[in-house]
Image (cartoon, rainbow over all chains, first blue to last red; front, side, top):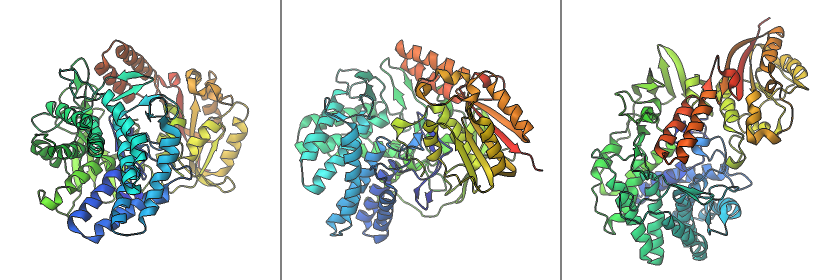
Length: 415
Length: 195
């Protein structure tokens, strides 16, 4: 999935898709890629992993725009810049790299730090910081707050403070955002206890509870506790993950979203992204969270294709009906979206030192029947293409490395 | 450079969807000329493709928002710059695009926002030796209806159903045929006849 300028490919998401723009995306995929390669370097001491982390960092250095933004940083909304939490996630990845290089005495650390700091200043502080609510907006023009996105920015500010040995970044920006995240958490007893609302818009709370996004809040809350020893942050993190695991199915999967009326929309269920839920779980193990990761690890691993990529989801075809998916996966289920695979990669690389996962570097082409809009098609991925055919006619083809799909019939113009 | 326009400055979805859909027709490896008379959409065009100057003949052209005052002379220029057999992709606002709040402050008087404008454009293309091959509408009327119902359910507290209807609306965002004229934006694919 690597193109000359960075990690590329189509994107499938709950809200929207980017199936036609397939060029490099400088978005949250770089958080997991950078962290994952650094995990491998940490575990093995092999220089090649650090080199790959540097190459990913260099992608961001080369791509950064004069205004501090990263181009094509909006993931499912691409092409566009100013994506959230994506630019903060890039910064977080860069800061992880800078932190490691600094510890190794490599002077290049400052270059990566400067890149991240430029974006944090020009975008997060100059455009998104809301002095009235002491938190980051989701848009420069609309009063809004998205807990999981703010959490990603918080993680970047914690790391910036640590690298620069300047706690003001935490005091001024990270902790007030964490407090607002806690204010979005459900505290009453009941089926939603511990859940964190997806967002608020113009002070109206949007009461949708996504287990995946709730788990994305946890690393920042844990960091807040470790930084301050304030029990509120740890309690919030533990309650959040208790909520997430209360809703886990026997097969280790999670529903997509739960609503206040107790109803839920189960499909599509994330596969590759479950890596982030498992990572949050591991962070809380030491603080008493007692859940068995195995069902979810099995769910994740079962979604790996012979190409090495992890499938995006199970049940995109049921997004409207919410009936149990048919036997054939939907096209978007099968896509090895880099911005989801980085989550699996990052988590799995934390297991390498403990040798809990057997891995192979041998990959093969992958072919499967799939559906889209009720039509049965054939999906094929190899080193050069992702291609979908029906009755020997090509309906979709992305030549890896190209910025746009080469062939896309109208049913693939999904947004 | 691709992807440089900030999310907060993006054009309405129907324009972005139409421009994205145009890209496979223009790629890969083709020499392209692009003409866009509306600055608000020029930024969207620029963040997708780097077109060549129009002083050499090219293999494909993207024509965004033909305007009443200039469309005929633009077509003459595009015809001159295109090699025989080349594709011309036209993206045009239709009459219902006048209802899109974001575009009320836009400049220009788009040809196809007038009743019969798209038909007039197609007839003129045919007379100029372009063969219309396919046409599509974005933000189809069924999408608008489903979105409206989705918002109602949201207000009634049925967020679960509101979300599902929103996705049903997205699945029907693109249309062809009967309801094309009731969409907000059209995509027209034409080929310059080989002489």
